[in-house]
Image: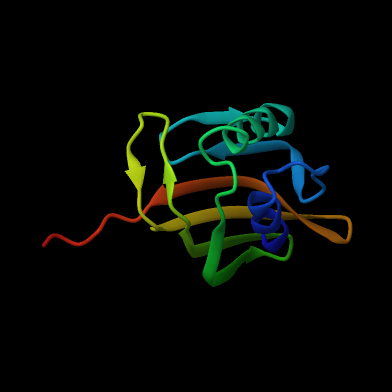
Length: 123
């Protein structure tokens, strides 16, 4: 999970060794990518356009084990400001991302993630 956030901050430019080949990725706009190649295509594209230079800083990582080789990690974070594809400027945003990680051999790998922007409380 920490390797994911390092890769996010670097724009996913390096080879990815923290996810399974069947990585299932759901972004905050509701887009779904199935598989490592499709997910990398999407995240690399957005990180060369409207998310270029954007960082996402974890604030809390809670891990729960479903079994000895499956865990769920829930991460709250703050994403730096950016201008979305619709041209709307976004201030720093709270995010919550849920990861399903699986143990393959001696390594823990991301098998699925889902990211959601945390709504601001009503005024």
